[in-house]
Image 1: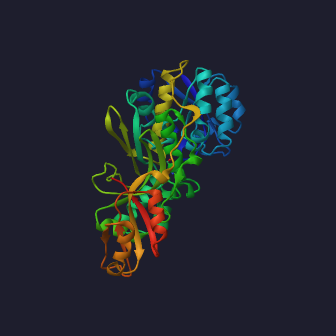
Image 2: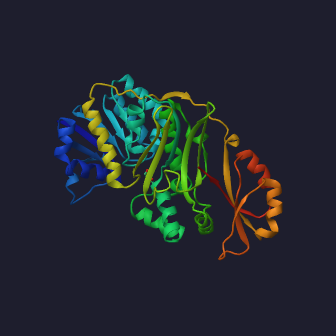
Image 3: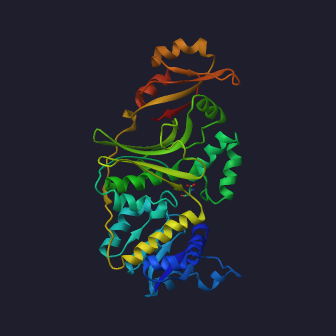
Length: 405
Ligand code: HSE
C-alpha cells in the first residue's frame, strides 16, 4: 500500500478523493498496489464530511511522516505551493501537481530537484485538464522534433466564445456560467486576458523544445476585445473565433504567442467547442497529431492528477526523465511572423475600398445587411510589423483578428 497526502480540498482536491474512491479497485490493479489517502491538508474543517478524519492543518505533519511517499499539490497559486512542493521533494517525497502557475514559474527547478533525489515531479493536469498531453510529449513523441503546437488550452474562454457564437449569449452572462461550473480561475482575468493559456503554451513549449520558456516573454492577447459583431462578421464567411496558444518553429526560429484566431472548418481545431480543449502537434517525422478532451472541471482534472499518481507508484525509486533545462529558449520577435488579418472598420464599404486597397492591395470584403455603418475585410498574408504600419494610416479600425489556416 502507498500512502499519499493531498494538499487542498477545493474543486480539484475533492475530485482526486472522489476518483480514488470511485475507481479504487481498478486503480489498485493498474498501480499494482493500493493507494491510500492518509492526509488532506486544508485550512478549513469539513464537519459532517467523512474527509474530516483525514484533515490536517499543518504541513509539517505530512512532511515528517515517512509513510507518505507522494504529495499531491492541488492548491493552486505559486505560494505557499512552491514552498510545500520544494520541501516535499527535499524530504524524499515525489510530487504530483495540477498547478500550472507553479509549473510555468518553477518547473525546470523542481524537475531538476526531483531528478537529483531520484524522485518525480509530475504535472499532467497542469495543461489540457483531463487530456493526456504532458506524458505524450515527454514519453511518446520522442522520435520527433516538434515543429508546431497550436492549442485551445482554456476551457472557460472556449466555452464563452462557443456560447456567444451558437446562442448569441452575452459575454458576462456566459462567464458567470463558466464560474458556476467550476471551469474558471478564482480570478477569471487569468482566463479572459489569456494569461492561463500563456502559462500552458509556455509549459508545452518548454517540454517540446527542452529549454525554459518564460511566460512573461510570450506576447499575449485575451478575448475581452471580441464582440458579438466580430463573431457575426466571422460567421458570415465561415470562420469561427478561438483563443489560440501557438508555438511554431519557422526557419529555425521559434515564435510563441497567445491571441484570438479566426479559423475555417478546414482547421482541425474548428470543431473544438464548449469547455473542450484541443491540442494540435506537428512532428517532423510523425506529421500531424491531435489531442482532444475536457480541458477543465473537477473530475477531468482529477483524472489526470490520479493518472500521475499511478505512474509515480509504478516508478518509485526511479526518475522519469523530463527534458526541460533551465537554459532560456530564445524566442523570435513576433513582428516578423506572417498571417492574414481580419479587420472590422467604420464606414461604407463602397466609399472606403479604394483607400483600403491602396494600402493593403486586393482584400476580401464582408458586409452584413443588419449592421450599418461598418464592414470588414480580410487582407492577404503580411507580417505583424507590415500590418501595424498600414493600419496606422487607416482611420476607424474597430478590431483586428489574426486569420489562421
Ligand atoms: N480556468 C482553466 C480553464 C481551468 O478554463 O481552462 C483549467 O486549467
